[in-house]
Length: 378
Image (cartoon, rainbow, N blue to C red; front, side, top):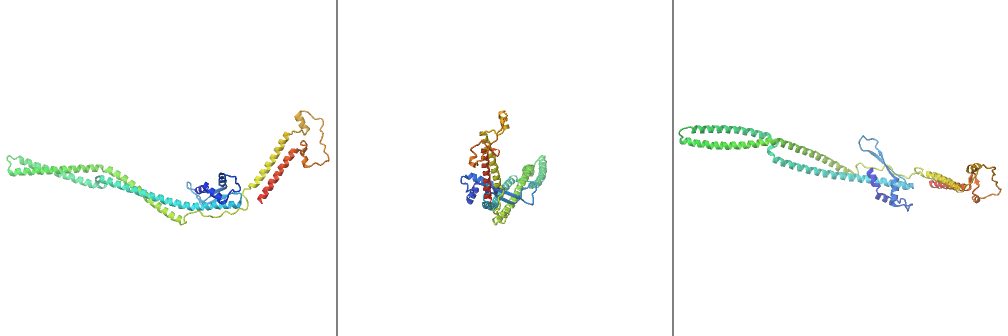
């Protein structure tokens, strides 16, 4: 709702609406900025919450949107409200398609990114396995069996060497060596060389196996970390694939206009009566302002031409008590309204002539305002 409202009340959209409906054409001196401000303030968007309610922490669920427009002309207000409502429908439909397309593009990119990460990690795992093939946890039992066999071979070779050395010592202990004894000694010597070579080879292999078995725990730890990272990436890959499939479904539904969207429940009709009673308030306020202005002007005129009217006023201002008070002597001659202002000092109905003229002007302004408001409401 906020996104749609912000898009519909942009400067470009409001300017197009003013031109489309000819708004404020009766105010040629009004600038475009002021027209935009007036139009923004005259249109309201109100969301109606869903009857199902919402749990704590969940987003607000809307069931309807009420659009209100206030204009000087009732038919124009209905057209403007319907125009905004149609804009909400159009923006909602296009926004659903745009969001669905953006979701599809995002999850497709996410699937590609995670797939590349999985391929890179698998290549790194393969390289590490090739570099530490002898110390892999799966080869540890084989290495241990081979090491046990080497130990047995070393013990057997050591026994064979001891036996050969004993035979050679026996032959050398003779006082006289026959030709056969010499050939036998040479054979024993060659056999001892072979045994020494075998012992050295077996010992070297035994050292390699021990070194490999010593590095197996570290290799096992590294491989466990690789397996964990690979499992996490595979889970993310499955989630991204599932969400991409859901986004594809939403996009197809939005393109066929079968997804969740806004519909127009009730179009704005021409109102029968104005809302708010603004004209009555203006007439009453104008009448009161005219009356107050008239009384204030009469007071100012009276201050400009001060007249002592009563004995108490003379005693208060001059500190002198009048001996006698002579009343006004009225003549039988009729005087017109134009003659009331000739003698401004004479009171009329307790007020001076100036005050009476101002009060009469205020009353006439009040009557004119009421008549104008009555004609407008008709």
